[in-house]
Length: 257
Image 1 (cartoon, helix red, strand yellow):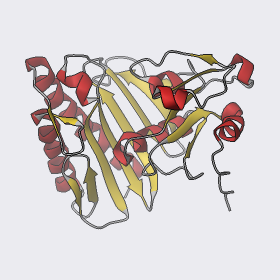
Image 2 (spheres, helix red, strand yellow; image 1 turned 120 degrees about the vertical axis):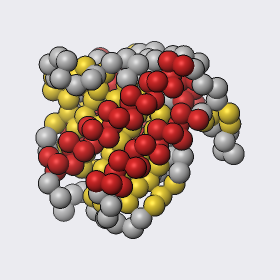
Image 3 (cartoon, one colour; image 1 turned 60 degrees about the horizontal axis):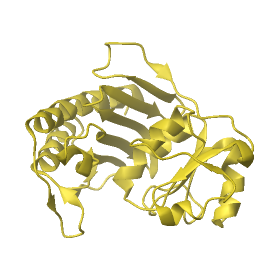
């Protein structure tokens, strides 16, 4: 399958999903709790169904894996879906929620599109093609290529983590940047240097791993690899990554063959 065709499909699918999600957001929806204690709204399920319908029509042989509706199909090409990442934001009228879509081929993420329709922003990456940010809907302004920071010493670094427990594991002498609503956006823009997020699922991480790597940064999961289904890990710029892994006592990353 041509990667340019896949990216066009990802854009079209994400745009349709973003329009639908934005309509729900503007009308307002209430959240309920799923069995695992996380929030969900009728919009989450409707948006995921929309994404699945579009992808199934265009790529009937591909597998689908989504937060709300699970996995369908067996293929080495898997579309990973988070219809509304940040449901708690969404349900209380905060615009800092996103639609996540990533394509994994033979176990490696090859493209990622993250859309924040209420913020009118979009981020995307392709394997070997770089990471980018633009206004949304796309085409209404210029896109720019993203690059992580070049901070090379911990003394100058700006770091943060998902929660207090993870934050306490960072080097005690390093400045903390209060995490904004979109800390990984700050990282790929080069505004911060590292973010530790030890939690969540593959649909939360898959697009951001590729976006960070294609912006020149690194991701390591808690087992020393860089998979999105291992409960999160460390995102950082390349210059600080190995030192932070040592501080966190993560296993060494396997060497590439």
